[in-house]
Image 1 (cartoon, rainbow, N blue to C red):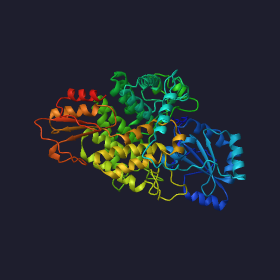
Image 2 (image 1 turned 180 degrees about the vertical axis):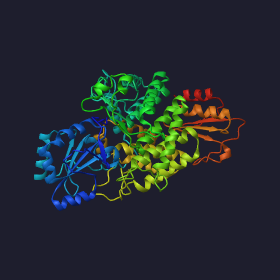
Image 3 (image 1 turned 120 degrees about the vertical axis):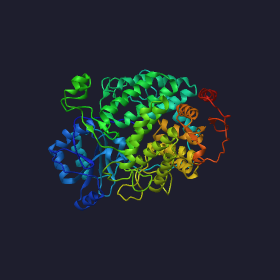
Image 4 (image 1 turned 180 degrees about the horizontal axis):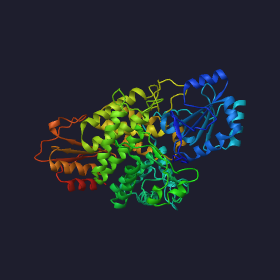
Length: 587
């Protein structure tokens, strides 16, 4: 399971894309290839301090290690010090996420990795690391690199069974959740478990329900919103930072749980997260901020602040909110809000999603059709994460609105990804453009390629374009080699992607006028049907044939729905309940 890593201490100032303190004696630089040229000329190494605005141990290290006179002296004499906010640089974040936060990477002047350290490094240890690295700059034996691609179309049966077994054995029967350390809801794990629940797998049903119930311990009972994780397995020792990507994961998980299990408590839990976003994390234009710190200051920590009542909290200074607006995080949130609308019928969730999308298309869209910038200052971009998340959000909008313009825009995003991020010599997609230059070799991150495989696969069914099908397979091949699967033996997302590429989605087609109440009722029923992996469309013949579809549906006296699986389609269904009955027969 991917780790969620550390948390916040106090508000900090931001300089460019890096994090800086006004009283630092260290001269911190932004990431730049030019610094490596300078390092070569001055016979220095490069130290990268990769952290986050909300990161607790980053600030502890800043207050201790980087205030130590010996550390300051060594860095000034032998190093060029670089500090980067990982939220602002998805390329560096994806490359080194296993080492942070904070992540400390020391490079030689040619970009070779000398040291990679995970988390807080105390002054004494850092002093030894700096001294030994400069005196004997031996390359790290585990250089960050891409794994070879598989020649197969997806997981082998052995690989699939191994990954499936890991998801079973990793379940914590005593405390719920997966893994025996930090506890949180992983969106891919919950989606996989709920899919299995629909297939009458009682083991996963029990695990999903127990984990969902345990997760309520991480919801702020006063303001709503979800703390990042519990650092103890009982779910009751929260790290209090609230990160946008975590809020997205919980909204999606609760929405899907409601869709599958029809228990109102899941809808209520999702609403508690949305309530927090509305009150604290949404800017006046309807887009979402990046994070809120756990603590107010070194003296007033989350352990003191969050047990207080609303009135008591508001009398104090507030935990810092990072007001950057990033396309990748907002695109993912849009998809989660759409899932909430689809599963619960909450129209306000769709309105919020559409409003955020309009702002992002105005303020983050690149001049080339389909592409998106990360933030207002897009240093190092464009990045795969942004166009991928926005492309997925636009497919999701098409699925619940039947507005064909969203599908066209999603196709544009797919084409942009193929033009800018595809590995033309092998398989898969890089975190940033492989031809953009840069000292570090382009990197293909596993979770991004899982998401790319799922995006392109669904896009291929909606558009009927083979290049998108081929792209889905390419993304999957890049992450299913023996070495890659062995290294990532817990990967429910990989199981999801592999299953989707090997099986077509449930296809729900509504035929009828969009201003007809009967057709509207059928479409609303269709978008609420689970699983999440489905293709939902609405043919109003006044608009012409659907993109990518060559099926000639019959002229019928009234609105109808057609339900198709991998080998057959139902007769026309005219009533929402009849459509639900057809679904029950499949399950």
